[in-house]
Structures are given as structure tokens and as C-alpha cells.
Image 1 (tube, rainbow over the protein chains, first blue to last red):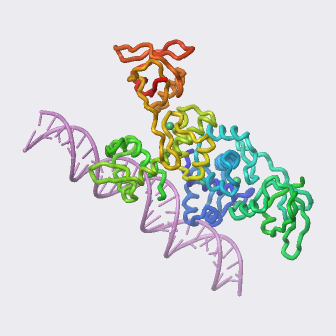
Image 2 (image 1 turned 135 degrees about the horizontal axis):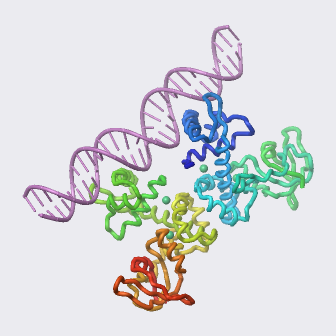
Image 3 (image 1 turned 90 degrees about the vertical axis):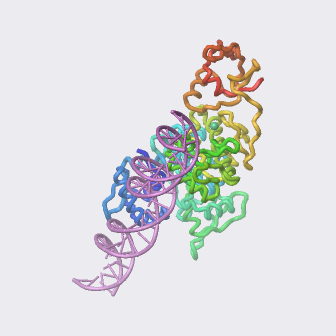
Length: 219
Length: 219
DNA sequence: AATATTATTTAGACAAATCTAAATAATTTT
DNA sequence: AAAATTATTTAGATTTGTCTAAATAATATT
Ligand SMILES: [Mn+2]
Ligand SMILES: [Mn+2]
Ligand SMILES: [Mn+2]
Ligand SMILES: [Mn+2]
């Protein structure tokens, strides 16, 4: 199936928004893609025609098996390019999403597979998100919780859920990255802020909002 | 200036066809871009509006200084990606043009410059074409002639002018690549074919058409 | 149940990039 | 210089992806 860049972006966004079997809404998709609901309705008709989504008027959107497969290929390319930019070209994790958003549309299985191999077949991207393999399979992520819900004291950072430049740059400033080990020193009930301590660093208090977006597991 | 992919492809094609001050013709450009003359006329009006080309009805097309600068940036990206694909991902020289045709449209100076640095700031691409630097300057190529015009006997291959998959695959099969050293053993007047000899190889006769497209200089 | 609000779709428009067919200009041949 | 040929442009359509404004459906509130 030959998809336009716009179609690919829609398929990927639907994949991102579709948790389990919940149908994706017109408005939700419009917001995610920074476009208008009317445009989403138009595109939904096209993607249904191409059998990438199930769609009935007023009933929301879900990917077909074919659509899911397509989405996983795009996600694979996106995350591999992010790895390339960070690992090989020394970009910082907050800079790579935008570039990968374009690079992901170069459709060549050979290129994708060679790139993966060149990078050592990585299984997670620079934000801790899993990378589908050539068959669309992802390693099921090891159990992780958001930092605000963690009960163990000694933790390691495994992913970041909000990947806005603002949060990623904040974490850079505080020296928090994937693999960073930390201990929870205190919970403050007043605003649910959390005091953490990293090795060789003074303790640090982070807001609930930040804590919610840092994924961790016990070390 | 924000250009579409189509506009970038036009600017690059105009740059390629414009030798010195000769204006590029509507038909020539249509042929190069595998499109119709009517489409070229339409685009010429747009590119003139954007001040990337000089264009008057029936008078042909030439790049402005701004257009030339833009073209050189695209060419730079194209050739750097070709280097990446060959040097890092082990693609063969006949496979990379098509992929670079897409990768060249990811517009990021930072990406381009980092890529260049990562590759060791190469000055020629896998086909022997010079790579513009960040300022659009190209090393003036060392003097070279096509193999059918060479008079010295001991030669080294410096570039290939016809970059069709057919010719590049043929040269692969015969073991001829950039840097290959060879001697001219004989010229056959009948069909202007040339017998050449590479070290540790049996002699080999190549057609005039092939010889015309191999650039060499004395070793 | 009626009303208000929100979500979604439809109708109609527009810009970009392309095309075909017809018109016109430039060039070459006779 | 007239006729024939070739090159280029124009006119009018089409496809893709988007938009705004209006209509309709679904949901929430009173
Ligand atoms: Mn994208
Ligand atoms: Mn990512
Ligand atoms: Mn291109
Ligand atoms: Mn090249």
C-alpha cells in the first residue's frame, strides 16, 4: 500500500491514541495532529477505503490489523532514527522527535533494517519507548511505574512519558536521564512534590507533574 | 524561504542542467524531472515569484544567486546522505541515489552539519561528485577526463558521470570502482572499444559508451 | 422531556501540484 | 517568405489535503 506522508502521520497518531480497544475520537485525533475535526473526518473516509481503519460515522476510529502493522513500521522507523541521532550524531533527547517525524517517512525496508543493525538492534529509543522489530514485535517492557506512584526507595529511570521539549530540557538541567539511579527521600503531602537524591548530587525536589511523567523501576 | 519538496526538486534539477550561463529549457527540465512541460511552466512562475529563478516567457530559466545557494544546500544534503548509506550502512553505489532523493528533503542545518562531521567531512560522494561545504563551496575537482579521451596509460578512476543503476551495476560486476587503478592496453578503432587491465585481473574490453562515462586522471 | 452543550459530519471553498488539449511563439525547412 | 515543425504557454480539470461555516447527531443538564 502506498501511503502519503499525511496518511502515515494519521495512522501513527491513531496507533498512539488507541489504547486497547477504545475507539479514537475525531476531536482527539484532530488535537493530536494539530488539525481540524472536519479534516479528520475527510481522512477517516480515505483510510477506511484503504482498509487501514474501521470507521463508522459518529462511532470513532480503530486500526485494522493491516493498519496496526503499518503503524508499527512507522513507529519503528521513527524510533530508530531517534537512536541514530542521539547515539551517532550526539543530539540531545529533546531535539530528535521533530527530525524523526520527517525521517520516518523514508520508506525502505532495507534502509530501516540496515539502520537497526548499524545501531546494534536497539530495543528502546532515547525516551525509553520500545522499538518494534522488523516483524512489528516489541519486547514487552519490564514493569515500570511513574515516579509519583513508586513505593520502592531505590529506583532507576526507564522512560519519560511527556516528551515535550520543556520537560526533557528540564530533566537535562537536573541531570536526570534514562538509567539515572535515584532514591526517594521524601513525599510532601501539601503539593505531592517529591524529594529525590542522586549519587554525588545534592537532594532535589520535583513537582508532582514532573514525577508523573518519569517512569521508573526498582533498581 | 520555505520550499516544498517539489520546489526543491525543481531547484536542484535546474542547478544540474544549468551549465555556466546557458538557460535551462522548459522541455529539458520536464524531461529531467519526468514531468510535462506545462507543469514546468507553472512551477517556473512560482519559483520566479519566490525569486529563486530568473524567468521570462519563452526565454528559459536560470537560477538567481539565492536559488543557487538553495540548490547547493540540497546537493550537499543529497551527497552527504549517499556517503552515509555507503560508508556506514554498507549500501552499494547504485542503491543510494533513490534513497538520498528523499533524505535530502529533511531540512536541518544542524543535522546536515553533524552528519558531515560524523562522516569526516567528506569532499566527494560515492559517485565521485564533489560535496559543497556548509557555505556552499566545493573543492574544485582535480583535472579529470573521460576514459575514452585519456592519453596517459596509467590511470585512476575518479568519478562516474552516468549514474544509472545499469552502469553502476555493470562496473560492480567488472570490479571497477572509485580509486581503481587501471592501464589502457589497447584502443580498437572499429567500435572505439578500449581494452583495460587492472592489477591481478585479466584484461577487459569495455565499450565506448562505458568508457565515456568513466572519469579518470593519471595516477 | 425539553433544552443546552458538545462532537461530528457535510457542503463548499482553496492552494499545491499535476495533467491533457488547444493556442501561440519560435525555429527550421523548403 | 511561406510552410512545417518544434517548443512553450494557456485554459481548464483533477487529486490531495486542508479549511470555515452550517447542519446534524449524541450527550449532558435542567
Ligand atoms: Mn511524521
Ligand atoms: Mn521517542
Ligand atoms: Mn528529491
Ligand atoms: Mn551521487
